[in-house]
Length: 212
Image (cartoon, rainbow, N blue to C red; front, side, top):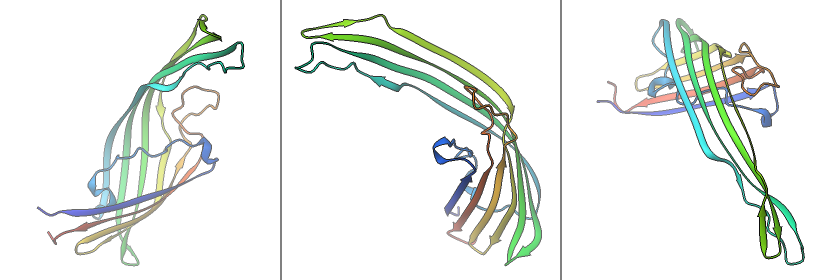
């Protein structure tokens, strides 16, 4: 069996400030040969991704304590929990042409995703009145909700995909963008689209231990 060493990197450029960013690319979508351009031809692939996140420590805190000089102080115990499930069905069209650029094959990619997202969460706030030598817990308040949406996602277009196929090394350089084709509403609790254009530049390579 041959073994290989993989090196891949992607740089993402967005049209909105970094503090408003979400991840446009699902990491781990492609396996070991993701950094290698396929042989000449036209390919279609249907890729299914599932992502889950949940926890009860998204938000937590203890009530404030009175100082020695304070006669009374008010604080709160608070905590939050939630879960998120994302199902993505990606339709991928890949073309590797016989045309050469600096010894590399020219190609292109198109990814049209369809996604279903389900999110739910809740938060509890418990006011606490602290007095010297005693603590009084006041009635707590709880808020929660959930949302489920499904639609086409942001389409990825990669017009630049050049790959070198050497004896024991494959290398690839790519450049593309995510188009805001998925629905997005800044006031919504849950969105399928990201509401902005995103540029992507990628480098990748696979080194094989033997010629086989």
